[in-house]
Image 1 (tube, rainbow, N blue to C red):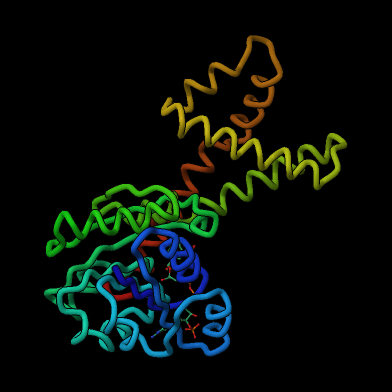
Image 2: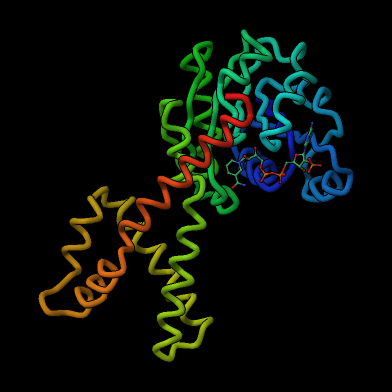
Length: 264
Ligand SMILES: NC(=O)c1ccc[n+]([C@@H]2O[C@H](COP(=O)([O-])OP(=O)(O)OC[C@H]3O[C@@H](n4cnc5c(N)ncnc54)[C@H](OP(=O)(O)O)[C@@H]3O)[C@@H](O)[C@H]2O)c1
């Protein structure tokens, strides 16, 4: 199956790299910037300057340009996409925006995150009314190559953007702050970063692999009169839990505003 990725930026490149590891998937990338095209070619990707040329030979089209450029891309390729599945990863661009350009289009909206670059993304997928079971399976298999996928109702996509779209940045801040705690207690910064990042990785791995509620896991590692309860008490006193809830709420509201400004 041939997949054309329109937009060879950070996400387009990460998707191209992972999709091309899947058996029987051939990837090409349309990218307007010549310098960027040359970099992608050096990595072995077939590239095009024109999205029309890339789309012509593909069965699946993935739109990975900035949200403001999506409508322009769809206008460019609209008479070439008949019968093709179109997956858009653009933040804030609703299915009805996509359908306003190509009403009969088979669209899937996908919201991955930057962890696609290390194949550890979580991608929320929302199919449009014209999409069949097989289309959804194609999207799930493509996006499984960059991590996990979940199906989500489009009404929750702004919330997903606020949680898992922006989430890696929250965890970078947590790692940085934990490492600074280590630094304060005398651990050299590079070692503190290693310790803190493996803590975040290990704790995530336990939650994912055990499928247990994190509150239960936390209770199990919190021994009576031990060290962990002292640390947790300070986090609760500082309102860290409320801060994260409010962070997701604020980022989701911002995603809603961006989507509204794009015409929703
Ligand atoms: N980065 C993330 O963590 C993340 C997470 C989830 C979803 N997304 C979504 O993914 C999309 C891409 O994000 P990104 O960070 O990869 O952006 P990016 O680095 O700006 O990549 C987009 C690329 O597409 C090029 N482009 C623009 N119009 C084009 C056209 N008509 N044909 C071919 N190429 C074209 C851009 O060139 P110019 O710069 O010259 O316009 C740019 O090189 C966005 O819509 C974003 O909302 C990103």
